[in-house]
Amino acid sequence: MDEPILLNLPDKVDDFDSAVDTGWELLRSSEPLNRLFYMASAVGDFSVIWHVLNFTQKIINPNRKRSVVRLALLIGIESLIVNKGIKRLFRRSRPEIGTSSHPHKLRQPATSSFPSGHASSAVLAASLLSENSSAAPFYKMIAAVVATSRLHVRAHHASDVIAGALIGWFFAKMVTTIQGL
Image (tube, rainbow, N blue to C red; front, side):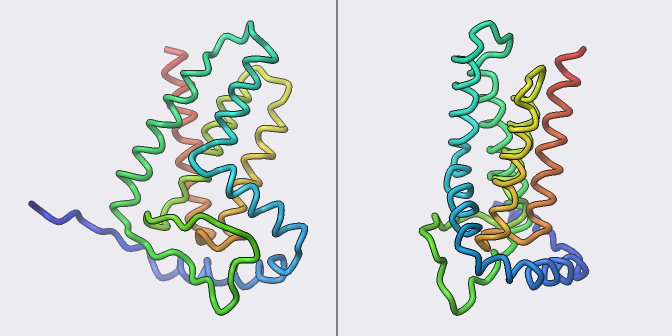
């Protein structure tokens, strides 16, 4: 069986990530931010927050055109493509935690760091939940917090989060374009 082709990111990406991580370090000493971002990272695991919000939106608005199953399936497809496809092309190491331990409990992912699946799912889900919804700013704010949490808890590099967000945005645009055909 042939070995998969592994892609490397340019050195400039590592330089960017290092600069962002250094700048972010001061924020990691804030206990309120630690609580917020560790909780956001945990509820982003397996897209739990998005499934809860999807189900809640349907309960609040039973006449909503979009089904609960639709978003769940789309998140599942996106997750498979990101975690079993794109991440296997890169096999990028996760950020080093350093000498200090995490101040809160955190699930240790086994997949490649690039791209962030939390960020991808967050942007996709928030975009689709925001369709014709007055809660769109709320969904987008939660997506931003979940995506950013991955940088804060050192589960991902900044470029992983940015790439994940772009992938989520791309998936959302594909879905809305296909719907419009």
